[in-house]
Image 1 (spheres, rainbow, N blue to C red):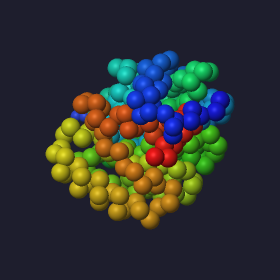
Image 2 (cartoon, rainbow, N blue to C red):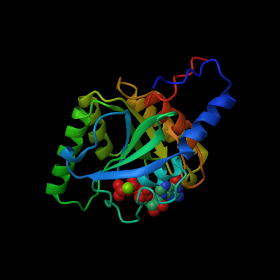
Image 3 (cartoon, protein in one colour):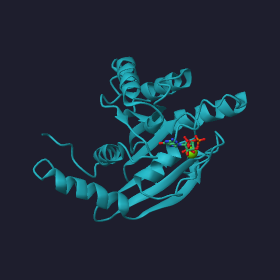
Length: 227
Ligand SMILES: Nc1nc2c(ncn2[C@@H]2O[C@H](COP(=O)(O)OP(=O)(O)OP(=O)(O)O)[C@@H](O)[C@H]2O)c(=O)[nH]1
Ligand SMILES: [Mg+2]
């Protein structure tokens, strides 16, 4: 399906298209603990990566306006698989959203960290239809050592990624602006990193439309706005 040409339509129409796409059909497809279990690479996909507890599953649920499509937890490290969700239909376009296992969990045994790194590296390198990784970073803390390792993996795999700051509701706007500037500075030297950082709160429904728009552009459902 070709992307909708939206550079000549009003932003109202674009917002409606975004809303329609994300309130339509969306379902959990499968959890893959192994790359052999991945679904056929027959449509674009967007993956959500980040430290354990950063809010990946919560943000995914908020994007698709479902409460418990992706399982959330107060216990870090609960999502251990690549969880695949399908969204859209033949008419609007189809997309996979992938909830990746969290990293940076201090108590994880070495073997587990190695297994995670191997799985993630192979996924990033081998998934031809992966269009963008949304790299979630806690808005209170900015980039941690484990995020830098993830960024290294992304840079090595030449996968496009975009930083999404989370939990905006927990800090003052000024602090978030400061973190946003600091992270932008740290990432400006990486060509695969999208220059636009999105600040979000799943709890307060902030930044979600920006994120939905970016996911639709990256997933070739909507074309980039030239204006
Ligand atoms: N205040 C606030 N809390 C949030 C927000 N998003 C997520 N949380 C909370 O953060 C905790 C972790 O959220 P999850 O979505 O399970 O985090 P995750 O990144 O999927 O974690 P793993 O699956 O362990 O990697 C939960 O208690 C959420 O309720 C947010 O926007 N604001
Ligand atoms: Mg999760």
